[in-house]
Length: 403
Ligand code: ADP
Image (cartoon, rainbow, N blue to C red; front, side):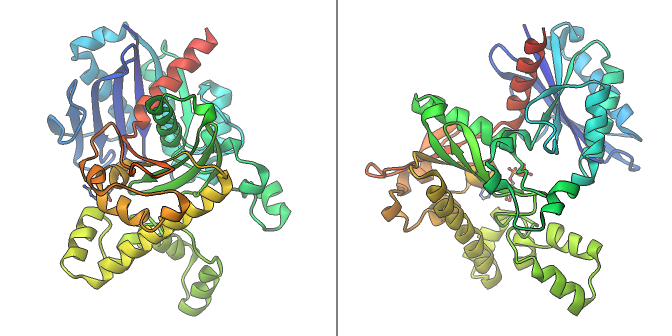
């Protein structure tokens, strides 16, 4: 048996998932949250059932990530299949920003940690928390190889004209301003699943992947390689999201700074936390927004119309980028679970060879399902993403490469 543990450390939470790699099966998963607060919380999900709701919830004091990782180690050691960690061959860490330094999963050592630290200006909220997790996990599991898997790495294949912004060259040279893209493990996983489902080599397929969760991103994938993606220097650009604005005239910031006296911090908070669905209709959960719209709420209707209109624009743009388009994949919370958003995003695209069958769309089942009409030239699929499994697989490959 070969096992890999995946850790995803945020500023006040640690998500974990233990995989048995021969079958790609999750053995245990859970979440320590509100680390550093008076009442932290450990949520465990048992084997074979990694979905919500968690099977066990405990309120415990977790002052620091160190105690959080210790707690996860204790929980795992009570799990018979963990068997004292005898089968654990690697720990994979989700790292948000790898800049231009990291284009593939990388075995963690002191140099790698220093390089990730150097990238903190590009991801000031996420990389520090990821680093704490890596440092603490290395101390807790000193004999297990640990691998950093970057959200940005898959998009390091973008051509120069796709990743450069038309700003003074010095912004790139001195401040690393360029498009990096995010959700890379999800886009990569979905592209692989799609190729497997269609029974064709990934290298032959041109695909648009639409990752629609709280964060939303689109990517254009030519022959398994990412050639464009909607998120940019940060995960703010591109599609409209739960609380993030997506594409925006940058002069709006200058306007609001001058006219409304907003500070950089206030603009940052407004665009990241108070925009998107929430900014337009007060709610960021798409299920609620759709229910409000169905009840006649005009603000919710506008929010959904903008949301699907922007997806449609990216489909058109990436179709042009790819030339020949074989498939469109919808994934993540909204992409997987909302037939309505899928249908409205792809409406009136018959002239581009894209048509969804309403019955197949409504009946779509995980983990992967085709929903296009019989005469749609482009296949349209609903694909369950699994970023943790992708991180585990990349971790195992990296550990084996090193042996
Ligand atoms: P995250 O980006 O945090 O991983 P998810 O991928 O879980 O998020 O997606 C969360 C989003 O998916 C929320 O907006 C939620 O409302 C939406 N969602 C989940 N189920 C449905 C559904 N049945 N219909 C519409 N939206 C849904």
